Length: 102
Image 1: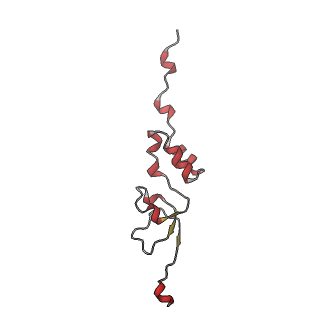
Image 2: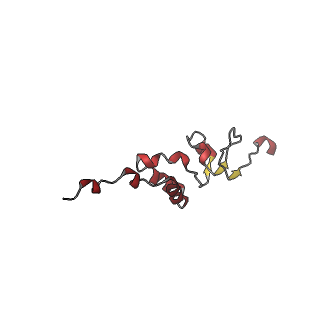
Image 3: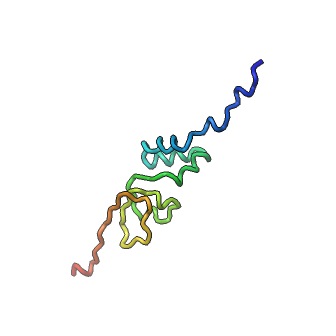
């Protein structure tokens, strides 16, 4: 008779290590990263660690819990109090007052 413990998989064997998850996500766009990482509780714990690289408006992420994890930010508001820590590229839209044109 075959021992049933042979068929029991160790939980550690099923888990990917930290490096593997980050390496896989490096090749995905932001929407794909979020979709994959939301599949289970274990992978959901990696959401705050990911750096999101798609360009996004700062007005959309200002209340986001992972505010500092966005690398390409479009500054479309007149004033920003806190710039995300992991920003790599920023696009600033210039604002002019209508009174100056008159």
